Length: 149
Ligand code: MC0
Image (cartoon, rainbow, N blue to C red):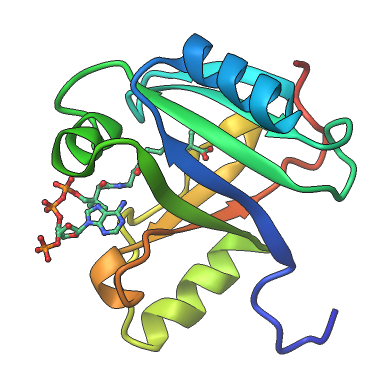
């Protein structure tokens, strides 16, 4: 990776869905996605499933299905306003604190002052969609040791 690159790759694209089980079934049957990982993130107010075209840890395509735990959560509000669809684009980074500092320096708003816990023990933060031309950008730093499924 070039030292000036901020992003390693697209880690995943996040889709807001009203019903996680139904959505996992649809994406498996219609498109052949396999469930790699599932967890509840109380702080984010979501039940999420990571779907992929390979085993977790391989560099294949991934989508994340995000269902709300509460109506007033980020996903609950997104669904109420837009219905199901793409809610976020997640870029993988090597050093979240460094990338966050660079982006703040460039005048972009990060949603959290410090990294939060994301899927599989990752560290995450978000760029406000109004500062990224209408796209909610998630920044993901993978854990050094992948969490148990
Ligand atoms: C809101 N806006 C969006 C947007 N959400 N634009 C693009 N994509 C989105 N997802 C726009 C609205 O349309 C509005 O534009 C403006 O941003 C302000 O929206 P708001 O009505 O104030 O919206 P809120 O209150 O729903 O807040 C939006 C905000 C929130 C992005 C701050 O969703 C948030 O905190 N998101 C970060 C956390 C998150 O998304 N968690 C769930 C995934 P107008 O033009 O109408 O003013 S958790 C996750 O992903 C974890 C598990 C992981 O991957 O590891």
